[in-house]
Image (cartoon, rainbow, N blue to C red; front, side, top):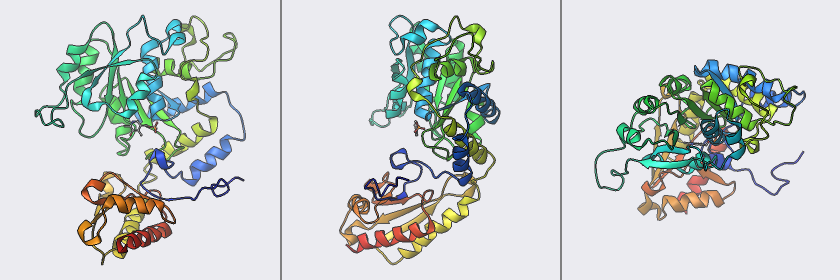
Length: 399
Ligand SMILES: *Cc1c(COP(=O)(O)O)cnc(C)c1O
């Protein structure tokens, strides 16, 4: 068996949580067992996707679901579905949309690096609203009427990046879009937990919702979920699945693909590079069941204790330690270590860098370095690693 060490790599202490850059979330034993089990037998992928999709639909309160190669892949597939439906010519043409509507309306303040996944299918963004608060030039955020004012005959749909405090409210955007029969694609990749978001976002009327499988769900980090309207999920499925079959023989479950609506068998679509394996699908479904049934809720106390052990060990240093969060919030507690940069003689940025370069390498969350704060996310560290982390931070503070 090849190990990281054999490849010349030193495993790190990941105190940043389920970030993709460092390898995603820890998979529970049941999830790993499902992966190994799935590898020992073979099933037609469209049947497996249909079965997984039925369960995803139940858990999300939607018509249909699909396991994708991450949430970003779900966005590319969802966009492709909105652009093409069952139109075989369009499916073949993507990402070129020269003679059909391909514009997605997006709030300027919701642009992010992840929206590349929407553009990858061929869509073009039309931005609405401004970033006036950030640019210190006004007090208002994007408003729902601005979406409607931007709709033209070139509009294909609306893209919305969901968050706890995104504006305008999703329900208002959906109402404006549906008035013009335009679908709304929602990126909710990181919006689990809370568990209720599995259903709540779709309940607002979103046509398609994308979730990550490798974050809080703790499935393989290369998995995700696309769920929503069955005609759109169906189009996404045929643009992702391997299509090397004969039309007469191809027999997808009707709830995944309504074969009667297809004039022929499309060839591999734009989503073919985004394939998901049978093992990954089984592992994700196992993780999803655990997540949805509250299987991870009891981890909070352990995580809190782990952070406390770090804070206790740093008590006599020139830092202020604070543990945030409650079990009810369903999110991991977080430890902030705010450095007295003058007393220590080093900035949080420098300490963060030395921690990465040390032995073992320690990667803390780096979102608040400018405020002098290192953040420790306990999701991916063991009790021993917590002590090792405290020792390393202590060494860095001592210079
Ligand atoms: C993580 C994330 C994604 C990408 O999800 P993957 O499952 O890694 O593909 C997209 N959008 C947002 C907002 C995210 O946080």
